[in-house]
Length: 393
Image (cartoon, rainbow, N blue to C red; front, side, top):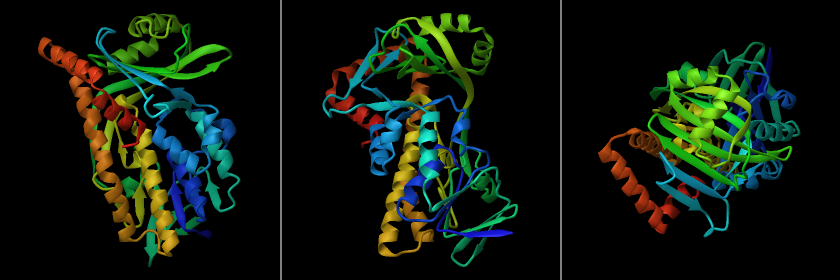
């Protein structure tokens, strides 16, 4: 039986777990990462989804010296168009006043590849793949995580193991969960017109359809669609051949990116959201999807997870500088105080916006039309909304 002593144990080596491990190792902590799958082989990354990175997240990635590697694969979002049903009712956002982008679109595989290569060079990070947590116990101010033939003895454990967190199940941490009884389909594709770094979000009765600009590939214009609809519709859509899917996409995208030429990849995901009743247990903190998940209508779920990581990074930096012990009740409560309300707020915003745009009758259609016109004409409101999307408020 091997026993490892470290400062920090991270369960989960996905996007959030990997950034957490790298950022905290930069502060001089000895970090152990336990990953259930074989994710740390960067040659075998199969995740074809994209991630929308906010300007606020970019600044944190710059601070920990990882953005240069990720940024070379990032396509900036310079403009966003919000369209209610059709092009006659829309809001146009840009960020000229701040002279920065509204966000960036990057393939997950490039983010993970950059992080894994960096992590494998960190001498104070030890990574174990294909391991599952069997038991957790405590000895004084230490938390001990047990796997087959391995004990990890640390001050604190960070659970970054996703929506179905095994750590949350062990502790039976209560959650509020909402099943939207819908699915999202994610399609990467080539198209005929230059997207000019513009993201689009069409609001239809059964859910939003977002078009996210991606980097050119082999001189072809490329974007990603995230389309929410009923389970029945998405199941029938994914069963069609690509030519029929292309025909439907050309109708729904209303010529905004020209003609869809070729589908590269397509995946579907069930649509649900959740919020933990609290973000910590004894010497354990939940991060990212282990703590919260949201309707994708605002594209901010991962960025809020990154705010968790940034908050944690600053908290660990403060405790290290003062010579204080990581993981005690004060530490965990301080993390909760800094992050719970932000998650609760985003949960409420995404849930209520989805509800408003689903309503489809004369009264609500007129009210939405008036509200969209009001926002489009108000610089103050547009600036507040764009600041929120950028993660800078």
